[in-house]
Amino acid sequence: MDLKGKVALITGGTHGIGASIAEHLAESGAHVCLVGRNEDQYGMKKTIEDLGVKCELLQADLSKEEDCKRVVEDTVAALGEIDILVHSAGSAAPGGLLTGARDVWYHAFDIHIHAAFHLAAAAAPSMKKNNGGAMIFISSAAGIRGVKNALAYATVKGALPQFTRALAFELSDSNIRVNCVSPGVIRTRFQNFLTPEQVKNNIDNRIPLHREGTPADVADAVSMLIKNEFITGENIAIDGGMTMRIV
Image (cartoon, rainbow, N blue to C red; front, side, top):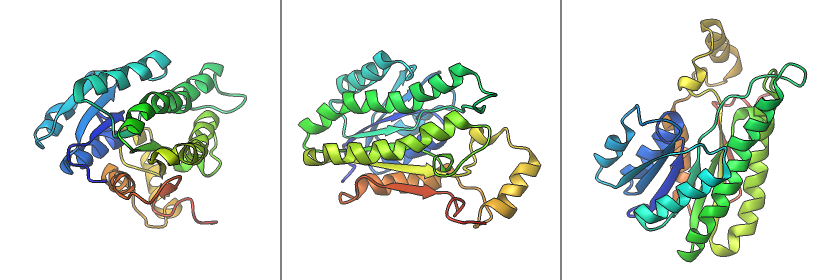
């Protein structure tokens, strides 16, 4: 897909991985609509516009179906269409079966899984009208392997690759490609809870490449999946080899 003049809707696009994806797509000429729950405290709208493309900023709570539908409608109204959907918004969901709050489980499904469903359902008609498009969902290495004290998070992230495969098959006749990426330890504010000892253990023992990833590492892969018109239904782990090893 040639991104020049295309329109990308990116949830969680005002910081971290989502922001890096937005910059990568804008650098290739795509107009961008960023969706965040709070104000654009990182100045991403100006950053994108400085690259010479249009940028809209929308506030929404994507755990709500009506907000998912609204951001798609507002993107089409402002920029004319949607060619690319990237669902990067999410949040931590700590706790186990006997130690986590019930609300944590349900909220995790609302923001990660139900939002993906509602956004895809709202965006697909516009893509179909334009004879194709691309959807990207952000899973996690936590969805590939078992994780202690993050039962809800691991479960919803594990569901996203299967949602990707099923949806890719369903939308293939409309030339809408659906792919997924599963980042490992990526240095964003999401990792700020790690202690220095945990960071050292990750680098020394858990990540074969012995370094943390960056948002740009994820954005590079996402950009490739969007541009490559012969990849659909795939999940790519971007984790320095963390989930591929046995010991």
